[in-house]
Image (tube, rainbow, N blue to C red):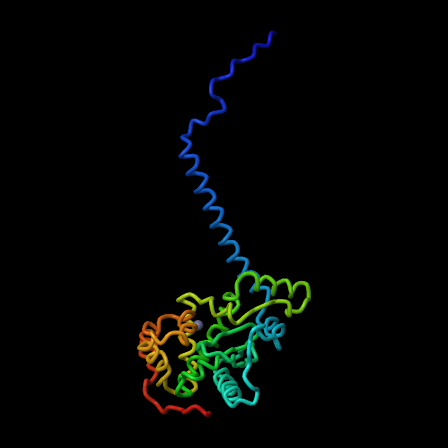
Length: 269
Ligand SMILES: [Zn+2]
């Protein structure tokens, strides 16, 4: 039998799809890949956190401090009193897996943050702003809420969560994990994390004092002073708008029937 080569069709290498449609498909495809990678990273953080139990985190970071922390004198009353207050509040969180440590950052910018291992950093600027123990208790209770949901680790960013994860599986220590207070103050939490932390904080304040009077008075003052910014900017950048927060806290107190009036405890310094 004789072999007869079939004749090639014309334009075999030319796509019959319009080039613009092809470009569009490419862009859509790349976007989809990008979204998939972001989702995968978010998922991997959850996996890493799952493999680093709270107890391990607490142990790893037991005497760790952020690199750029400027502490005030250890004999300062405010340090001792804030630590005592955190200890009192933490008793209302049954089986808290952390031994909470307080450090005061000698900065004018008012802020408070939850850091790995149960470290709570409060700035001197924040302590200058609070006018009663009840006001301070709510700010601290809110930070305890971030620990309970482990928001504090998610906020550190992927890099740190992964280094922590590898420190655990390779048995290295965590001293090489560089975390700066300055970086963390730039990373806020999302609305839901903030509102969950507020709810936990308010419940703790109620458990401690039997009422929630002055729990949000600090934010009521700030609501009218948002233009007095430089010192408040830091806290306000990482927390919801003071006015919205006051509304939400009032709503929670009403819903839970937590008394809004009660005896105010003065600061002990
Ligand atoms: Zn917060």
